[in-house]
Image (cartoon, rainbow, N blue to C red; front, side, top):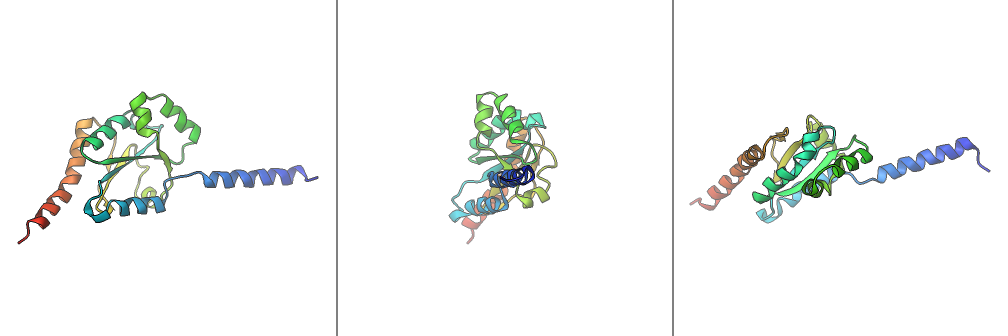
Amino acid sequence: MRSPAVLALMLLLLAGAAQAQDPCFSDTDWQALQRSTAADGEARPVLLYVWSPRMVLSAQHAAEVRQVAVDLGVDWLPVHDGRVPAGEIREAVQTLDVAGRQALAQSQPLCARELIDADAWRHFPTAWLVQQGRADTRPLVSAMPPVYWRLGLQERLLPVTTTQNQEQHLP
């Protein structure tokens, strides 16, 4: 028979291993996302939306932001503050209306060190437009009315469109 201390240690190790296996949006995922938007120049841009239940508006406005992105032909990828317990995330999502729950249904905890080092947790929401193989260096930060999300996304989409148009019309 094993001692209680050995059993406790085994349980701690198993719990740590199970936690390590929880899926999160990692640096590998981040790099894959950027590569996926570069596919033959035909891939749709993606809005990576970082939210937290501790900044309530980032959850409550997610459906509106998603709709703006979809209207502009931008795919939606929500991730949440990886420091927040999963139970708190589930509780926050359950308080939302149907559109809000759908917008955040596929959200994963953020663990991509590159994004965390780029201040992904500075404020919620923080969102990056990813297109043509890279993320815009100017994230959209803060809850705001949909009209300003639209302007911010259009501002970030226009340089790519302008560049493509210029390349197509070169002599």
